[in-house]
Length: 303
Image (cartoon, rainbow, N blue to C red; front, side, top):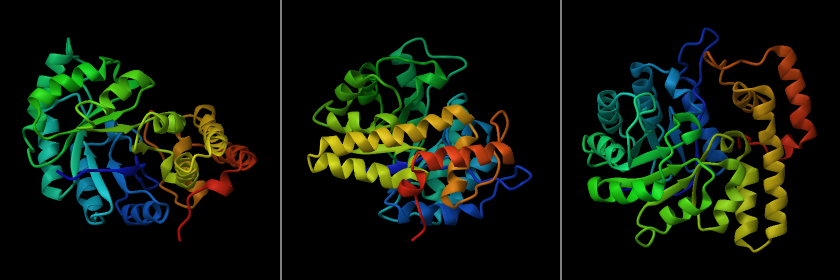
């Protein structure tokens, strides 16, 4: 199976002014990300408003992104999590489109009672595409499913031959490292908290998935470079700068991610409800805030 490494962006989904899917933005996004050292995309995930997309829209995104895949740019298709049957259908569509891997969350409305039941659920989806790496997406702040991933990994190891690993978006560093080192680093445990990239590096992380890499990849590449060269003071200072910029996502709400993209030079349109699209007045205040936090120094740019 393809081993996916490096900095993977969770891309926003482009919509036109009427809120319809804008596939014309995908080629620009892929070039923008590659120009800034990103090595792949996690398509139609949380950042991509995947829960607000229809089945057909997800399939259309898979097909469009697949046009711009290559050996140095991996594509992971997010399937969802509430309907196992729909996830199976989407996994097959992802395979047909030519994506490199698939991922799903735990069912988060009607939930599994324990790790074993969850692993059996995931195994049913993974078995539909045995040729593709399958990833579990751990994001308990949204799913409210919070089993220890080390326990789940041991269950999945027995049940899912094509298991690629876990997209780990949580703050339990001990559990994360246990998964990372499981069976001599057998699985790719991809770190999903941008605001804690340096902490994850310190315990062995080498693959990262996040939304802020889509507009701030240069600062994270510098963090990684400083860490690997042994300059921890510089790495920590850069992580602090990245974290200050992340605070504006909280200040301005869910629509602020696309506002960051627009400020970096790539307008991906409005957000879908229930997300909030910034008004012109809000966007003006937002620009002033991010300028004061040195966004222009570290933003992504087309080459």
